[in-house]
Image 1 (cartoon, rainbow, N blue to C red):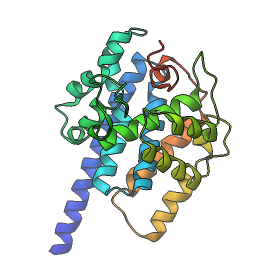
Image 2 (cartoon, rainbow, N blue to C red):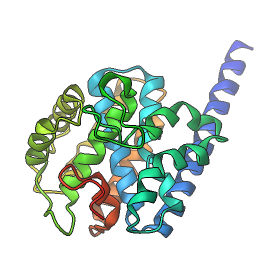
Image 3 (cartoon, rainbow, N blue to C red):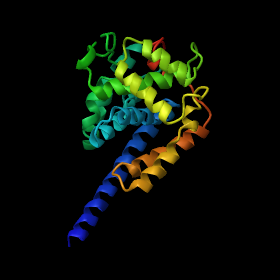
Length: 256
């Protein structure tokens, strides 16, 4: 009987996790229809948030919240007209309102609401300073900026991951501990020598999932396998640089 109960609980957990994944994929797909390129950006940011979280050695629950925040951080852009800075400034708050009724997303809402706040108080929508910014938001901010730098914009050509990390380290608006965590993760995943956005194609995601499988079952293994598959698919897609990354660029925030 205990084994049957354990099997049932595990099956329920797996079904719930799959439902969460489908819901998030649907939301991100809707955002991509509204703003092409947003889905690939969101997936990359989610992967980076996972790397940073593991490098910071946060617990499994917090790691899931960081991944969720990374994937859904821009969902508020569904209601934003392209090129309207005022509406862009409101998108973190709009996103939290949209997700407020989705139970599994609720723990990630503080990070989504504050992912454009900056350590020096220069961010938006509230101009929050330093440690008052949730850790998850500081992680998303670094992941966002890294993806913007390695993707490039019309005004700023894409740079290599190593150069991007150097620029992030010089940015007073970003948490230096989080930037250092991303640098450790980037080295661990073998992407520092990439030339630009191809860092995703060079990431050792598949090897990592296989190693975890050999070491024994983990609650996050199924999620990581899914992320690895999506990462491989996105790596094969042509780069689609739109205004989505422009409001994340450290040198041209809200340069729409």
